Image (spheres, rainbow, N blue to C red):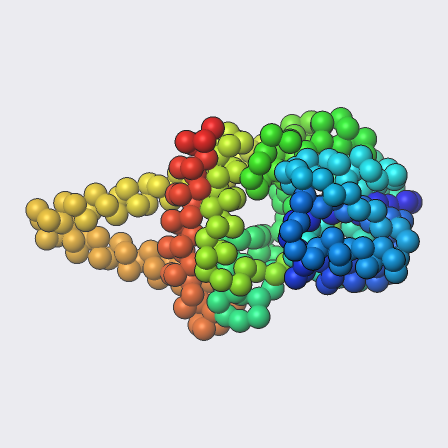
Length: 314
């Protein structure tokens, strides 16, 4: 079974070496690594060129383009039938590729969805994982692939028309998944096909990543996802708006009736405690959990801003 690993990068000088080191040292070696650089202005291309000199089967295309366009270009350049994808900012476990492509050995599978381990060097970054990704305990038969860890056949990529190149922001993988599910693609889930995904380093980075996710999701106009039912990202965003609408109304009415302020204060405390508790349930560490309320409010503001920006720019 011949496999091409396809990657898109943009200004990843701080992460690309760790990713490439992990890929060239896999227990199952890829037959080639195809990289599309979307116009980096840092040392990303220089670093990739260094790896090309050391390892022969690394292709590099430099093309100013969106992430979705870059993904399609990388698949077009690849010479093999099985395409594995991961992202800069990730580090693949040594058995990642072996485990990820295993389901294709028996045939009948279109897509293999691997998983990721969210990592952070301190309690602040560890807490972010609750807001940005899927917890291991929630990896089940409804889990949908992430471009951090996925493989698919060239045939299914052709059949569904590839990644949607109209997506300028994040969420091109959500759109890709939607097309896969609607097409009836056969998806295998492989929890042991792990990459490590580093969390943002600052609250500002966390805000803008969440903002981009929300903006991309609303542009997709997906309200009911076949695998997830009514709990699509956009439905969850509307629930955030509803929470804050209720809070604002309680605060306004409290100027006339003090009882409403008491209700507002109780609801605010309950909301902050809930955000603390959901992080604590994941980690069992109060130092990590103390970041829950701060990250919850930041996430809410980013989601509201991203959703609104997406609506206005459609």
